[in-house]
Amino acid sequence: MDYAQWTPVYDRLLADLGYDRAGDETARDRLVPLTDRFDLGPLRERIRGATVAIAGGADSLATEIGVARDADVVIAASVAADTCLDHGAPVDCMVTDLDKNPATARRLTHEGVPVAVHAHGDNLDLVESVVPDCTSEAVLPTTQAEPVAHVRNFGGFTDGDRAAFLADHLGAATLRFPGWDLDDPGVEPAKRAKLDWAARLLRWLERRRGGRFGPLDGRRTALDEDPLTPPYDD
Image 1 (cartoon, rainbow, N blue to C red):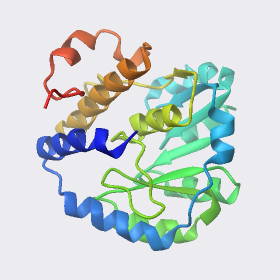
Image 2: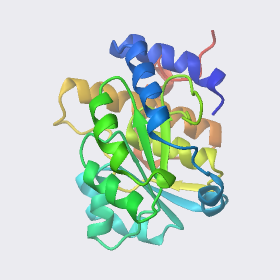
Image 3: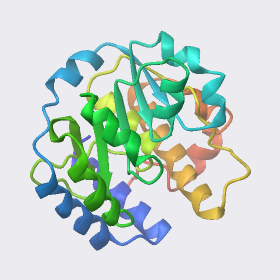
Image 4: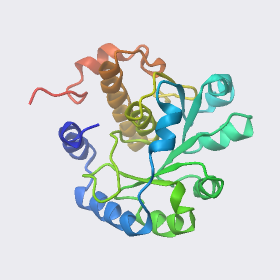
């Protein structure tokens, strides 16, 4: 994802959700001295041309764990890492903003598993308290703001859709989506707004890849009529 392509999406996301760009940039800048440059080469070699399971954190992941087990590579979003490990599926990479299971992120880095740690305006305290206890070589630092130094921006907003954008960036041939529920009726309004953005971004990525992502079944018409769904004409 070229940052120039991401910028208009990021601008609209901030405006829609009322987030502060300066907060994202502050957290990003704090992540710089806490991390080192991550070598993407080995992860790219595993993902390029592979079938990648983007494991989501919905309760359905436990019953859909076979999709993860059968994939060549598993990228787990946040708590999906725990579910995968508990049910015998490997975790080849974790994507997290550290807000639910930071101990898992720490442990995986100590085991040499890459963890894409995301810094944004609401998790500065977690960045400062968790990242120093991780194995630096296994931490892939990411931001949703403009990338600086070795902090990367592959596109995406929630842990789940950022995992999909990461897999796409690294050349995945096929994406599978066990454990996803973008229509969960039980979530609070703030979480609903985030899931709506995850759906918009997945639709954008789906169209860019020319594929079909299961979590979007039944939503494509509405998403294509939604003015916040990228790409934009202006």
